[in-house]
Length: 209
Ligand code: PRT
Ligand code: MG
Image 1 (cartoon, rainbow, N blue to C red):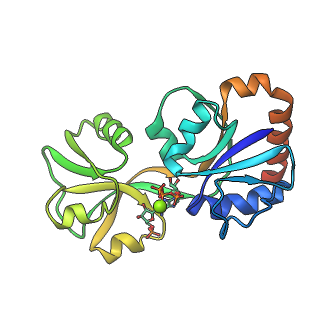
Image 2 (image 1 turned 90 degrees about the horizontal axis):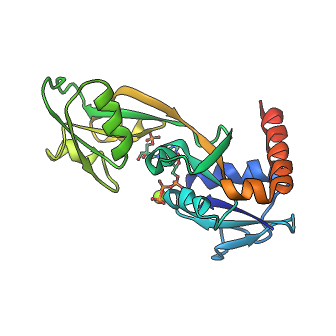
């Protein structure tokens, strides 16, 4: 049995059609089912439904053999504990800095609100910018409006969320997409099964190109 960890939100909407195209379709409807373990049309593959930020943890500890996670989440998780064999090219967006519209660039030390503490720290450090990073768990856009931070680091897709809050994108930190990650021990112990699934996924990616 192979277990694949997927998050229920945004990634799932795009991961589901991808998995279906690769021949893996959940038997229960994930939109209406409250089950956290979904059997699929392949009796050797099941899905576990978890929070996006928990995917690397489940895969690292081998509770799932594989998972689908955003590069943003993988960077924050850090470490060399996972294989990342495939870019699935789904749930794409940009990790950016953003500030209030026409707010002047600050010369000295800046305050940055973000959920991406590690990534933000290394981004500003690489540029020699002194930044105090304030960790938030959501509603980052609010921080500059109420004087909590000079700017934010967050994901941007259409830009509508920034715009609706009087913010504008500034610097691109990196483009983000969802990756397939694999547990390192499982890659050895279940090599045949995992490799054949990876081959199938690669074929599916080719068909989509
Ligand atoms: O709910 P939970 O805390 O578990 O996580 P989540 O809601 O972040 O998870 P989920 O399942 O929705 O997936 C999040 C993942 O989707 C991220 O880790 C990214 O890899 C990917 N992704 C792609 C995005 C976006 N695009 C995106 N636009 N995640 C979030 N956003 C948010 C962004 O943070 C901002 O609030 O959408 C807003 C901006 O969108 P626009 O279109 O207004 O610019
Ligand atoms: Mg969410």
